[in-house]
Amino acid sequence: MPNLFKRSHQATLDPRNDSVEIGTCHLIFRLPEIVEQIIQHLIPDPMAGSCASHRPGSSSSSSRNGGHRSYFKTVQDVLPLLYVNWLWHDCVSRYTWRHIAFEDTATDYDHFIKFANVISGGASMSALTSNSAPALAVATTPDDVSHASRPCAQQASPMKRTESSAKPLFPILASLMYQKQDKVTPPSALEKAGSETPDSCTRLGPSTYQNRVRSLTLRKIKERTINDPLQHIGYHAPHLTTLDIYICDYVTNSALYPFLEHGQLTYLSLAGCQRINDEAILQVAATCPLLEHLDLRACGHVSDTSIASIAMHCPKLRHLNVGRVKDRQHITDLSIELIARHTQVSVLGLAGCDITDASLILLATLRQIERVSINNCTKVSDHAVRAFAWYCPKLSVFEMKECHRIHDWEAVSKLVKRKVLLTLCEKQNRACEDWARRHGMTLNVQAPVK
Image 1 (tube, rainbow, N blue to C red):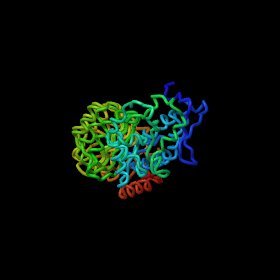
Image 2: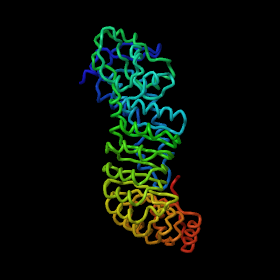
Image 3: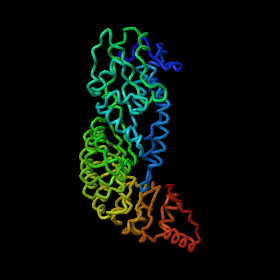
Image 4: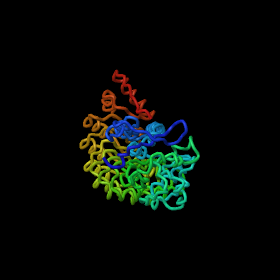
């Protein structure tokens, strides 16, 4: 076991006086495997099952937001565990840093800027350890405060210890302190530990936390200055696998490139980011061979050019959404047929695209399609519906609103009987009901819950 976890004295938080006192942990709470299991039980994964629950033609923001709120409430509740000892701090911080999310509020944007500074090692400690800073930070002792103007990256290197130097505090989340105290816990509380504190217990550097970030979510942030901090995060999150940017109007291609350099992305959602174009998605294709989920809803500048490249370079792709309300001519059979032939796609959002029966029949016959949206695809006809009814036994959602060339209600009735959730417009619903009445049938068409 590393020296970091072999301390004979463990520091714990005394709830009576908000100071650190010395105690001894039971052996069971010093076993990494046991602590890891406890933390996993306490902190749920906000991403678990999220991909499976997303409908291809609808916004997944509400379902994902619910999961994130529950997750971050849990994280807030377990933050005191960071004070137990170094082993607990190490295990808890692996989870508190794993999933990061920011919403569309001024306060959250301020937190976003601070987080970008901290993860890139460019923020001063004095700015990040105040009682109002909920960003992630490394706690400092008063002796360290004199170096507050020095960047984190410089402070993070091992420091020479002298007899007069104060014992370093545990790295903590600054948000842990905002309700309890106006400054970090005084180092005098640690003096009881003696002078045996090992060198391995010095302050953890930014790289320790950079390697723990796995997902980043930004939702509806409208600030024009979003790109610079986003780039900083991208450069310093080498193990990030999930990037979810939802309706952030000013996000540009340049903000994405640092994330792509690491080649780790499996989940990329840029829904509603209208400044993103083919140049960025071509880079995604070139650098993200592990990509499984790509959401480009309402990205009107993305065309067949980059989607074809995705098809040829991302063979593990299972979820693709290129639905749109304008610029339909940019997505055609050309790229979708390549998606059908070269990926593992099973969830597909094609609403408003300029596709025909040809690409849809190819998808139905070559792939086990589970959910598909062809809302407002005006060239699609009965042939495509029959193909999905006959060749896709796993189909669970079929959205065909405003597809007025579809008249084969018998094929639609087969989908209804299989409990496939259908989205029809009012005109289609009336036509379907009239057909069922003429044939002495009652069809209970169920739409997906939006």
